[in-house]
Amino acid sequence: MRLALSRPSDADERKSLYLKLFEATVVYAILFFFALLVGIPFLYMITGSFKTNGQLFSWPINLLAPEPTLNNYERLLSGEEIPYLRQMINSVVIAVSQSALTLLFASMVGWGFAKYEFRGKTFLTIFLLFTFAIPFQVTLVPLFQMIVRLGLLDNYLGVILPSSVSAFGAFFMRQAMVSIPSELLDAGRIDGASEWGLFWRIGIPLSRGALSILCVLVFLTAWNDYLWPLIVLRTPEKFTYPVGLATLKGLYKIEYGMILGGAFIATLPIVLIFVAGRNQILDNLTIGAVKQ
Amino acid sequence: MFGRGRKIAPYLFISPFFLGYAIFFLYPVIQSLQLSFYRQVGLTNPPRFIGFDNYVRLVTKDALFIKALTNTTYYALGSILIIVPLALLLALILHSPKLRFREFFRFLYFTPNITAGVVVGIIFGLVFEEQYGLINNLLLAPLGLENVRWLREARWIMPAVILLGAWKWTGINAIYFMVGLQNIPPELKEAARVDGATRWQVFWHVTLPLLRPILAFVLTIAIIGSYNLFAEPAILVGMEGGPNNAGMTMTMYLYARGFRELKMGYASAIGYSLAVIILVLSVVQLFLIRAFRED
Image (cartoon, rainbow over all chains, first blue to last red):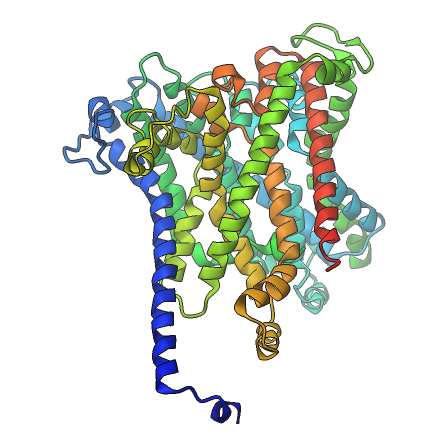
């Protein structure tokens, strides 16, 4: 009915076609422009890692590497300046342990809050919500003193333990586990399952999706963290890769190609993880925003 | 039998987390408050009670603290003013139904955000290089503008850090806005169009007001992120913030006093000042967003 009333003339149709074409051009031009803004610094990092310092700092600048050399990588990975390979492995060990511990604590506390009624539950929830808002900088000094007293200075545990209790993780897992049907648990109880068995055989498998997202987020945070490892770790053999790269930048003679190489190989695994799980991660990343 | 197990079970499930939370978060939070009223330099020296002296000194005598506060606020305002409109624009474009390569663009815009702060700082060392940097050579030179001494001149350092922040954070905020747009029922916009509203009017009177919760979220994250800023400027211009400490942020200042000079009491006071500032800003921001609701 409406269609019949407002049927456009040929001229109108042509005009709207031009308008649409124009709009599409503008839209893709904007998207492309921003893609360049985001992409070119990355490109420059990658090609720069295949250049000598002389090629990197010469004019006019070249976004590509016409005469690529592997020299930077050879020298970086041979440990000539810093034990970089070792530092990358340290980062893996720390990020993996921190993810595992955080997931364990978060899923347990999330399960307790999601599937049980107990005294003090409301109080603890509100308490957690309020303390959640306290920025971590407040804790840095006493935490450092504690780490020193426990003899965990320059020790992986000193980096891992304080970061493994995540209030965000607790809320995240509660949210994911609350939708698991309680009838399933009652059926399990009738069959004689223990409470731990219910958590382990029903709770964990049914929240695999949430666990994998939390795992990626925690791993990413641990992998990229600079401040806390910088405070705790003291010897180059114990450093994580960001701390190592930073010392490389502080050297008397700055080897920028080498630094770029280190930056590139440390970024690669993260990007690959995100390429593999991009849609799930990007969609769920925003859970916090939507649930506001 | 399971009646009893069921009563104890929840406490067993929550206790590992809360034990860790008490040791590694609550205790330091309280300890830090106490320490902020003491003077303690080094790890072994005994602390001496000095009341509010640390706080008084921060506000009245410590020019570097005021500088770090100003720098951080400058960064917060500058980056928000760039990021929010750009992210909104990108979200509106990425949200349009017939767009091709949407996933590609969405992912690409997001990648700076998953890159380590140290790596971003390293990359932008080249972006802002005076003679051979990307911005001076690829953006300013074609426009006939002179090279800017980004990292060597005090007044250009914060603008450089703001641009870095915009590069890192615009994409993810666009994704947040996209989620907000997806949650707006299409009927609302259609109804407005049927009533004769132009696209601009629909955006201004329907879409934007409905994005307010997301805007509040984005602003809160931006404020917190500004006061957390550490790795990027530390790598870009050094731990002291470069010429005239122009790139010194609040967290960098806390690190300098607490972990380079080991002024434990003083650094605790800085930490608490930071907490109060973030709290106040977040509340102010929520009230502002709410005030705009009365239209």
